[in-house]
Length: 316
Length: 248
Image 1 (cartoon, each protein chain N blue to C red):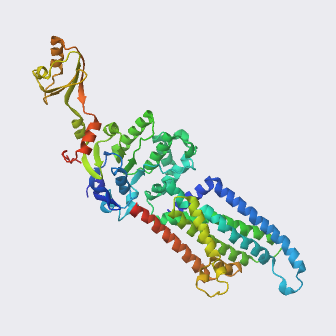
Image 2 (cartoon, one colour):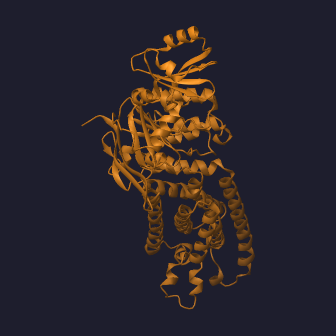
Image 3 (tube, each protein chain N blue to C red):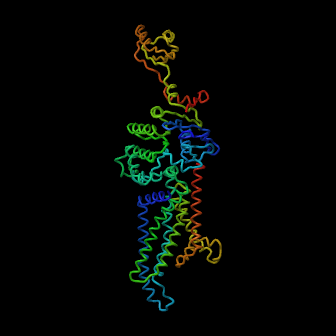
């Protein structure tokens, strides 16, 4: 008996012959936050629907804490909290009524329902909205109710489909803190296309494109790809690339339009200081020097467009 | 678990004005019929000279009210049942139920029981109203019990059919119209075969099976008919929802 909270084995889903998701396999352990990345229509939501038993996979299986979703759906579903892309809110009810129903349906024992509702509201910052009709809440608060509904029964696995859509920056920060808090003792899967968000809250990343898993690994691997060994230098009188190459540690120099120059340096070298000194001595007129980060977007685009060229570090 | 789904349904029913309005309008109509029935009773009975023409007050007023009630629910049930699943489909709240640890059967039966419980309020109120006759007359409680059971079974059958049509569409109005047409056809099926009452199709008519209850007779064959009718449409609904999960 392993202690994986989520096990997806060869998940495949056909929609009329077209593979929306094909052969997606991964595992997740307790205390991990998994980020699901992918362009629109990549199969993120379909995968999540299969994980939560809302959609039957055409092939493959899902196990939640070792319980098969197909064979024992009730037991498996009891361990999951799920917020779909479209918030499943009954708008004619008040926040309290709705959360009470959610708790009841998720088998919270009747003596603990009141407490569970209070705790969920507090965690999602809904305390002062108890008696309001969900219909009258703002978009952001409705989203919070959706999240509260997913964590009310303290599930082992929380699956949130684009949880921060439509929230203001402060709310986003709160929700991210909440995700990390839940993720410290449980497992969380979130899907998003906001890349920095993944970096902030997740320890594992999966990039899915056209139904296929193109990257599955720890966030550090992705970060390493992102923060390379490059410097971006802006100078008023830029020297030629050859001149730059003479400096110790510089491996590659590339002149860019707009008086910019991109310099790649050897793995363990730190040529920034030398460059600044040379700039002063030769009057290059340096006015800006910064590490050149390949944006996460670039990594993402790279991974999703050149999937064959990218090695797949499976490090789950 | 079934009870929790039913409770949720009842809550939704009473959270919108729809439930209250239909309940009060129907009770108003039944009350009017009841009063008219009592008035007519004296008018008719004072004219009925021979003992054979005389009927008891329970039967006279009861037939009046229950006959009207069985007709009125034809309009009321589609209006109430139309939202059960189609509304959830439209506002995309079905995943809330699907991802909770409850089976499809529990969801469907829960929704069905929620609606039947709501409608049974009507049945109880009608029975209570007729029982007030007992203040000045000696009424036949057995007749009221049989009629109540009959009305409840009929309303439950209507609900099961309405639930099925509600599961087929995203538009509550479409569900209501389909339910109404189907119920109307089933109600008046026996009229089409009036010349040939032994026809098999005629015995599918819901009205015909209500008839024995209306006369104060609890017939197991009719109970079985309603039971099978309900079971059939609930099963079809479960299958329809399961197809959602399979086909997506």
